[in-house]
Length: 266
Image 1 (cartoon, one colour):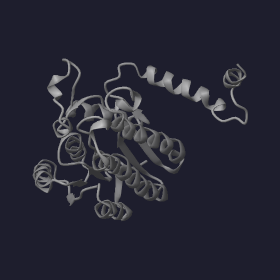
Image 2 (tube, one colour; image 1 turned 90 degrees about the vertical axis):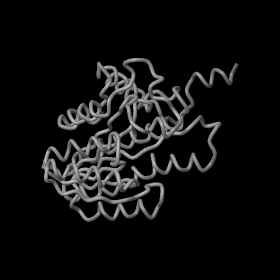
Image 3 (cartoon, rainbow, N blue to C red; image 1 turned 180 degrees about the vertical axis):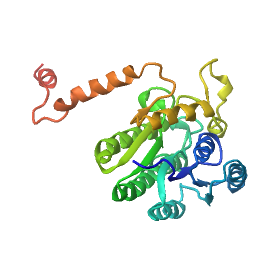
Image 4 (cartoon, rainbow, N blue to C red; image 1 turned 30 degrees about the horizontal axis):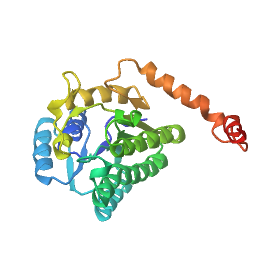
């Protein structure tokens, strides 16, 4: 896969994890396409990175919860000059499922599920046709811990993990590399925007965005399908995967499991 200097499209690129990815890929010599709502921040970031690295940087203002703006980014990907897509844009909820209404729930689904799914599909079609390309989906460790917090945010991130693993299994032979990155709590503006105090977490709980991205890029260079920067022993995740795979032959059968027949008979 010759994606060493391919143009990188990053969503949610104005701040936080997305801005750090922009910095790191620019310093690797990649041209960038930055996508976010905040044009002012993206322009400032682009000006700094152009001055430091000399790479070409395109800026696209877009609210990915809007179908028209999302379609605009799909069209941009279809041009065929993008080699790496980073699906980073996302949001959390202020409060639980009991404290949010249809508007808030629809918005988080649009941004955290619909947008990255459609963009991953648009990119994958181009990459598979070329025989090379990479999709990085920023999920979350909460995809593995649905009991924590509200379940809606973690559910959207579980979707991204599921999508990434399916793409890795089905598209790797077509030259498409897919990486799911699962951050733990990371110091970004998502906390303030969702009404949470990031400083209320215990000491040693929150990772800096720079450290998160640098670790994720080590996983990217190693072509890991799943990268979990805070997890000391990846064997724990591998064991979970093996246990899940072991259930596979028993997940669909014509007969009801004996344990349910016994309960009915009783």
